[in-house]
Length: 549
Image 1: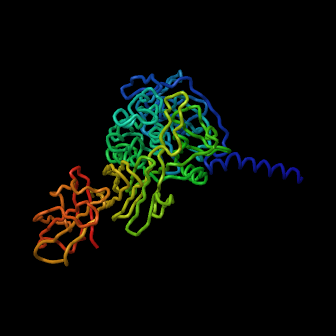
Image 2: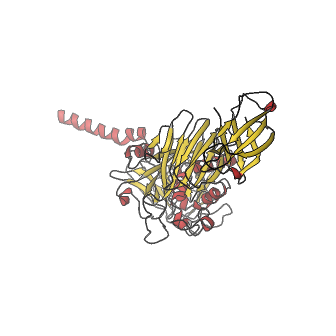
């Protein structure tokens, strides 16, 4: 009798495991069953056949799964199944077509895939996969705990020979001048954008390395051949502004940089359905899924490299993104290595690298200092890896405070200053220095604010002030990196007012042989409640600023 009861109990337990539990947890324990339809034909909205497998939407839906209802092992009936209102059609031969290109769509943060809508009866789950080898798959899949990122190749003939950045005029870079050689970062970014719901460019083209590269070139998205990662967020914002009311697109933000082999952070992002861009020597790839002993990847240069085991399960750093509807403000400063940057905010907090001590700081909240490496030329069969330390040093502050900052550079170099407001709009200033330099930055995240970058100079106010009459002599001091002869006198302002200058003359005030500039301002129209600062420009339009305590 006891034996019979045990058998009944075991049978009941098996029944629960096979029927009730899968319904509760989304088929996580379901057995995969695959049935392949013979042919799928893709057509554009004019019913012209897309014969080239590289055409949209085929390549960009490689490994993208959709869940819905249909009958296991049976063809989908004519007009039965739709994706976002687009009908899947079939005939008795099993041929299928998609009548329009499909944009990605997400039900919510936990379900990063479209649902198939059907007017037919509920049968088994149906999964649609459109890839380089298009096929319809039927069966119950454990899809609620994984996700799929579309594969894109930087070597695709549609764009591999296109100019990367402005390589034909400012290059060649270490990787050459083409997307095929230099496009690993933008191709990885394109894959992440498409997965996160930015399937279109602000120009209305599909998001791919070509359309992304074109937009970045036109909108200051590069610095010295390196990608400004926050411009990927700006790209998504502009797409959302134009197409957000008519298409299912999202805004994306650059979260920051993760450290080498930070598997815990990588696991956290992947578990939250956020693919991560991983740095390898001279190259970038996309990490898209955690597996038992490694990670699934999309390598934009080598399609046959499908796991991180191809790179000894290691990476040098991470570039992280997520969907957002919030603040996209940031300060993004770039300079070719080995020049180092150190920034200090109004509270004395630092970020960057002190060239005197070699110490790296991240005291400013959400600040990152990292090397954007030179790329290996992936268009070559055996690309040469760049030397360690070769590339562009980046100093980034995400969601910075309103206020003034001081920046020190360690040596003569060019510096790209980029300011993004809370809407992702960018303002850019570029400087070239003859030696180490000290700059000031005035920043606000508010839209429309004019980002100011200026060379810090020394001034001295003569006499007892403030006063309400007469003239105010202000001495602008020459320095190691500041030539008085380069000053445009017509641009000089004192105390932020349109003050008139009676005269200006060169005077010797120091022990060195260099002359300083003494300028006389009309005291009657000076606003003494303002900061006692002298501002102006050189004849090459370089801004400068000096303040007196």
